[in-house]
Length: 453
Ligand SMILES: Cc1cc2nc3c(=O)[nH]c(=O)nc-3n(C[C@H](O)[C@H](O)[C@H](O)COP(=O)(O)OP(=O)(O)OC[C@H]3O[C@@H](n4cnc5c(N)ncnc54)[C@H](O)[C@@H]3O)c2cc1C
Image 1 (cartoon, protein in one colour):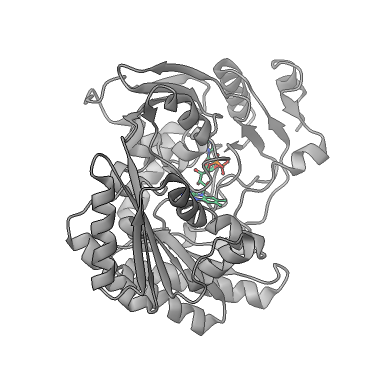
Image 2: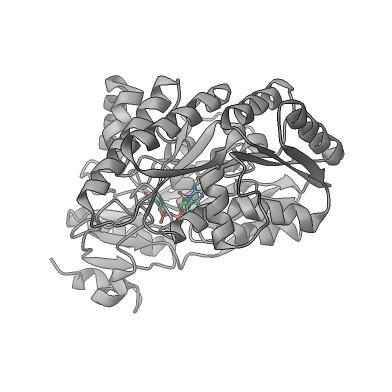
């Protein structure tokens, strides 16, 4: 198959077939998913161009893998053999900021942090903040229903979206939702596409819901010498009814990875570090109350501050965790969730999995959501035995999460990596319903086949 007939319909430079350039579009950030060789990489700049591409792909039965920044951790944006990689990287316009209605209309290729910077000038903010927020795109965030550190108070990506513009596999442009906070007209197609991992259509733009920027923010941190004691302190925070705007954890291996990456003066001996924030008028009082609660529940040290520099350093230490561990070598960043009061049990199970498989695991996560990322630290991707043990570790972590009433993925998505365990969590009826929805929207099965469900 060649792409000449598609090239003729698109502006010069939109269709890339040069192998060296295509190399940069073959992988996402899931190290264990082997990349295929794409037929071409497409870099459209308008919705019409995306429609043209999808019509051509359907007419020629060519698989399409939509792509944002390729920071996905489940292999959903990894190229398939003979596919078109449809990169949204050039669709970067912020079409509108409507301050009074607290809405922004942005194209799929806009980087998450750029939305934040653009709306900050108007006293507003866009809450979803995945750790990759300086790199990942709104389209990728929507397609994975990304989470982040502020979810504990403001919800995941889904909770900040009012409507979408989506190009369907047949090239038609679908508009979902409305510009209103309330809208119950028809089936909720917006939320069907959010988290659909490029399996149903290509998201080209979104109407995002913004919030007023909090008046003030304060940060708390607490260190524990024992994992179980830290888990009990977290339960005490949950039970207190306090709603922090961030509640994160880092275990000892993560703390040390961060310190190795950049000196942050974290306690290298702590078994568990809890870092969080409160926002609003009584931010400092709330942060102090949580720090105190940690102290009464066995923290070796705990403090709260509203000093912006100190706060930023602490939050930065947590934000660096993913990058810092990836720097140490091949890393499989797992993503599981449990009802948050069962977090301590999950941490204990992860420890056991590490001991049983001999795979070093550093765990970081969004404690307030019961969502953690056990990061499997590998030494050599070519070591078949290590890969086998890593897969056993991943499987055992997923099984533990399901047994504890949780999920095999809290925010990274199923992609290709988590597919083997999906049915175990959701059951056969759910799988059947999902496949029927897919068949209705994508009858030729060209949208990211073998991913998502
Ligand atoms: C260091 C690090 C930290 C991270 N922290 C977090 C975190 O805190 N929370 C979190 O949720 N995730 C996190 N991630 C994972 C990742 O950043 C998110 O999944 C992110 O949403 C992916 O965005 P992307 O633009 O890179 O998408 P990609 O990786 O390019 O694509 C991801 C998926 O979305 C699909 N897709 C992309 N764009 C579109 C589109 N326009 N239309 C339809 N489908 C599309 C792709 O086909 C693929 O299935 C982290 C990743 C890294 C490397």
